[in-house]
Image (tube, rainbow, N blue to C red):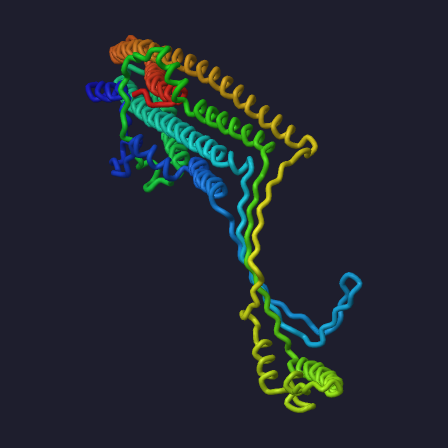
Length: 503
């Protein structure tokens, strides 16, 4: 009996014990504390990591809005093209290109715009970033509460395994006692069969308790976002939680919840973001200021140089003929004649001068990067929208409604949190008081079992009476464990409602 008394004492302290069959020696496996579980969940929980990923875009939104306010945007373009020979019409005028040509162009531009949205952008994006950060804090607090609750539920399931194991041992002792009494003629075969059935039921309950404990651990690992490094039955949860009388003050808890509850803080940040959005909507009535500057160039190279040189020769010959006619007029007037070959660029009446040919070839050899630069261009403009329908009024009205909705959401959440804190505070008081009641029930059941065992051993009690006493003890011990862990889970729920650890 001393061994079972020690086991019951361990159960009262709610210390998690090994969940292995008594016939199998304990296997050393991985251990997991609550702090380790929370730390791993922060790193691996998929749902929390999805919320955490929102921080990057929020930071870049602030940088983008700040850069738009102080820095111009820049663009660069490079184009390559080909144009075939032929004619085209534009504005009633025909443009003819006798030789195919390659062309290229570039442009570099700077632009800067200052308007209401640009002015209010940094403040609005910072408010949205703050809202994102508060949402991450809220998600972290929810993750902590979720993992803590499941850790306690797993410990509770493991402790129930020990209760089931003790019941198996009690029924084994009952079976041995019934067999011994049957052999000396002090009990019937019916007592032996009843003891065998009770032991079988207890063994099935032990298997189910093992299954429940393993499933609770698996659920804990799932919420952490990891897999078990060892067989799940070898994973040991090593933290213990002593029962201490709660000394929390309701007024202090409510005040802490108002200031630190992550859900309220997140909604207040969203309220600030909605206020910044309203300011941005009102800024649509401000004028906009635009500055732009650009550099560009163009290059065109003809592919049929002989054709172009032929056209140049024909033009030069026309100039040469005009020059000869002009010389006749000059001779009549007594003026000296011009050198028509030099003026027209001809070496002889049918040949272009070599420097003209080489000059054309050099000027035509420009594709792709020998650009002819265009003049620098810059412009400054100010625009004031006078009437745009009612789009600006609509946007302001929508932004004002969203801010008012955010105000009401904060108020509604605050009322819900205060009611939640109050309710969980009362639940904690009830859970703590129930521990004493369940402890008294457990002690009474143990005393009843001791009396039933003594009566059956002395022959004055029945097997049914002993069986009922054993079942009562199992139920009372299970209820006691449930009340102990219900108390710890109530504290975890209160911490989640307040928004900060209380132990």
